[in-house]
Image (cartoon, rainbow, N blue to C red; front, side, top):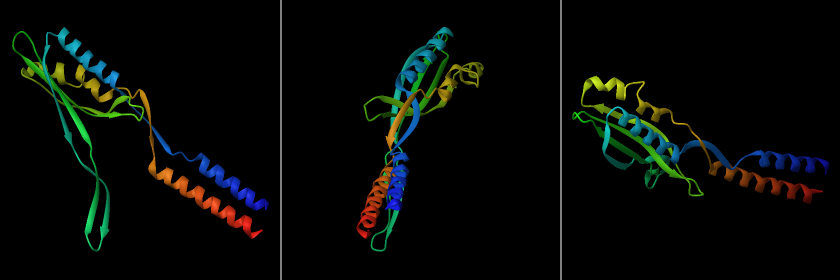
Length: 183
């Protein structure tokens, strides 16, 4: 009986310490918006004013699983991966233009809070080649999008761990019942 209690205690500790949630860090929507305003402000101080913006959202489906049946052949489980690309256009009083594009994935937590992840500066160009290094180069203000802080903690359910814990608890209880009925 002492071994049964020890086994039961071990199972409780083992499954109790496994987590059904994954924690990771993302960028707050407010932090992203602040960076957009900061770039606009700094470009305005260089004489370039915002002349327009455009947004394009595209779906890049991702294969999340593959199965095979001798009757139907191969099948794939797919997940939608929506990527948003914002383009900002600027011009100065001399007619020189500059534009940059940022891609990201807009998401929401289970509580409804908006956040962005996978932010990347995906394009930058100037009409005057002399402005390129200052406005799009490695030390330019737009490069901050590639290193925005991940300042929001998000928790998501880990389905695999949840199933393993549920199955483990079920098996543990069955073993305990079998052990108790054997005595």
